[in-house]
Length: 85
Image (tube, rainbow, N blue to C red; front, side):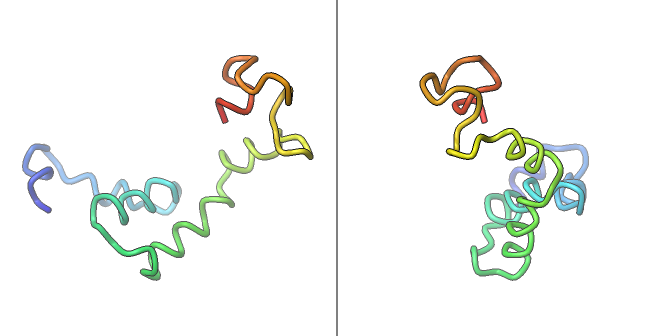
């Protein structure tokens, strides 16, 4: 586990586990630390993702039928349509 840390000047784990970014925290716990999906910290981080501002902002623009922008062209307009979300 310390292999990747030895390549860095400082250990970024405190920053990656900060409370303000539950997506980073979830991925750090599961991908870097290999914690199981049933771990209480993993469950908590995952549950917080849907409540964070960027996720709420993205889903606030979703249409009632589940798409963004136009249901006939999921790729366009670029960066706004379903494909990009």
